[in-house]
Length: 180
Image (tube, rainbow, N blue to C red):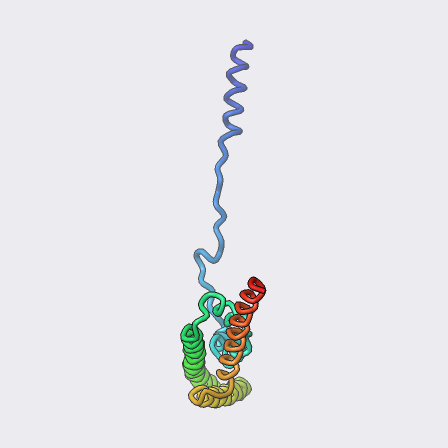
């Protein structure tokens, strides 16, 4: 009898070892949630004035300083300034495109909500349209300044140049400290 009990205990323990792991299935795997109109409109802000101002307000001195330590040639500095200008111009173009798409969306919503008789919603949408057109006018001014190498892009260039000059000076200071 004891022999049979030994075999039974082994069978019981093997059942405990085999567990089935069930992966967790999330709702997002099967259901795509729709964006509401307010979420749709907030996506228009991806490339807007705030992104342009954020880029222009970055401190490029550190980048210029590091670049001077890597390659102290002025042509390298000029090339990097040109690249920064290209990046800035890309932001401007993307802002225009983003605002144009946003205006098309707003105009569609104004027309459809007007047809539905939602006067308050139409007024809100018209206000958003006016604000967007004001933002486009401001981006146009920034682009004009950009084309004249003035305004925000001048700040970016000066910041980088200052850092590059500081990097060159730091290299010279190191040489002087070693030899003096």
